[in-house]
Length: 627
Image (cartoon, rainbow, N blue to C red):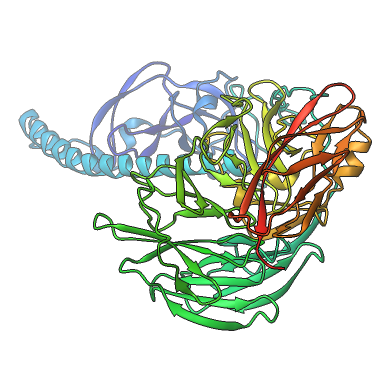
């Protein structure tokens, strides 16, 4: 029976007569002599006529010709090595190796040396061609490897759960599966093991529920500097890009007016009846009436140094504190008459400890008699008190030193002090227990923001609790539910804190709490009735929540402080005051002399309840000369 033989040099296939053992053959195509191994019967059948074929065993796929119908097909490597029964002889008469075509026979006249030369030349030619083919094959294999890598990565990224294999199209004709590659019947998709769920801490029962939604008023752009004015009635919001100052009324929860601004760099100060705009580039100040919101006066800053800061009491008609400087050539802090916009002679602050610069802040008490300031560089937080005999300048332990509206307390991070720099109460806070204070817009109230945490590490979450205080008591009258709008005011990772005095404003007279979130692109407004809230509380409290009226020279004076206490039995005692002042029951009395020399009178009232708990009501009472 004829079998197919493949030349190991040129890979040509030609038939030979079946032989029981190994035999030497000459390739009819290239003339190369080689030894063919004994054939083994296989179970491969022709895909057309199903005739079994017998081929030489090999470890790679090889083409063969069907002995029945003459069709050529490829025998897989695994099947070629598998033993099978010998196929019957249905082919034409056998062709022996002696009857191979003429080019395969040895030509007469050639000796072995000639054969060796030809063989060497052919081997050299084949070697050169093989090297080129090898480089091409290696290059193609490398390219396929790179493409396959991209395919695998894309599959891992974009694959979705589904069948593990896609159905393949089957070629026409019967194909027998090989023994080395069994066929899997009804393949199942791989089982995907879900990723382990990260354990989370249970809700902290001590964490109070969040406050209900508040009314939100959007702003045209993030707010710049914000000032309180109109006697504590309005918020003036600088909009830098729009070159406007928005006037926000917390009582109506609306922006009631926009005031045009001549430059994107502007400083704000506001009083009872006027809004002051300062332009550092032009070194000018402009006054607007709060009755009409129209500009009514302009003047240059009477200083040889550039303008850096303005400050004015929200309930006063002046004076206006102006800060100018040109480091290291000098600084100039002085008062300006708001009605004339002229510098007041003899009001310069000497040895202030402050070097005014761009970005400095100035705060003022409600009546405009006490100022605090903070600047960078070599400056220190400071407080300035205007006295008939000049200024009293004191460094402040609070940073930033935000003066309260009553002018008797300065509020900072975990600390309260007097304008003279004396600490009031205990300094609180610390790592993981931060506390920040900021005063209300009017009256004896102030707010606290306390750091709290819920959950266990690494799922710990930090938040702020807001408390409302009165007088000098560091114990809150009311602790509010968690306010979502305060999230982001403290960066718990870096420790950076937004300035609370520029983000949170409490208006006790209209029971409104307004918050600018960290993005400053809107205003959150809540109605907070402190008196109603403390009525529901079981905690003890004692607080003075009223403000003293102005005394008139030559007129009788009477002031009955409003005291909140859940224990009752409130009593007043005068510890310090001007000559002739006394306490009558629950009221402070004074026949004001017509020749009283000062413009203020310092008063200290001791307030107690039925349990013996006490607090102090300290204030500088204004004494006016008008009849």
